[in-house]
Image 1 (tube, one colour):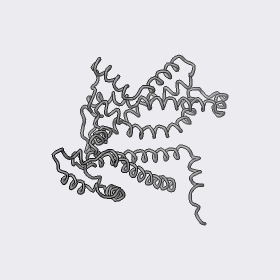
Image 2 (cartoon, rainbow, N blue to C red):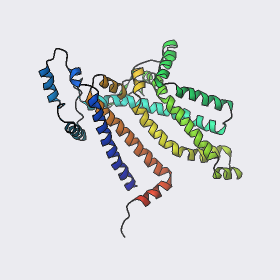
Image 3 (cartoon, rainbow, N blue to C red):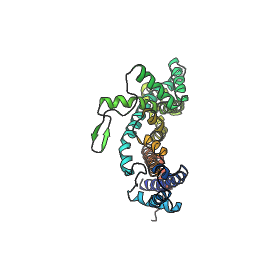
Image 4 (tube, rainbow, N blue to C red):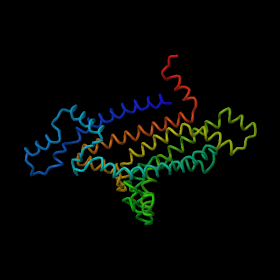
Length: 331
């Protein structure tokens, strides 16, 4: 197990360095931050002096190495636009994005897994066909269109839920949470449903396909022949083996929800990292954009590591394979 974890950590380090390099390379072409920081009355001499102070005249490799070295030391730099520490700006936005992603993932699992099991056990039923058709329509519509439709129905026409903002929050240390206020939950529902629609459809169809394949397995037929109760057969034996590949998809879903919540946060003006990233693009705030992508990459790496560990814990064959692939000790 220790060798497995060490191998994954080494791979994660290379992934983080590659993401940081690509992000830093691409941001050189998004525009000149000096023109956004200064006005039309600023002289060329003042602009060049500011460019020199920020190190923008240095070679690309020097800028990247300085960026990497400072991040390893915990210094994420300052925003070009607000002159605030980037670490504080990201830390203020992380709770909103994480809570949105967690609620969206929970909604997709609570609805997607039972729906997938039902449509697999009764594939020809009218309700199963209705569920499949509805989810197909939902996943075919872009996320921002779903968000606008929910705003129009539940916010404008019915007036049940707020259409923008985060609502009330409660400070728990440095974490501002929406989970402990009614207004926070009301503001959280619409963006969470919008963000979770695609994840719900993916989860449901994956569970359905895996469940139908498991139900055709020999050990399931043998258990049916022995007279094992169908409820126990479905939910203890079949569903347990179905969930093994679902764990990987769920882990990747959570990383994707965190990374691709930009559109949803923009539609609902949700004050998370995605909205901060859009604002930084508008003002060519390179430090914020770079740190954002590195943080997102870290989330993906962390989630994948947890998924790999869960895989090893659930499937003993992976532990045996890892032992054989590990270094051979001399006797």
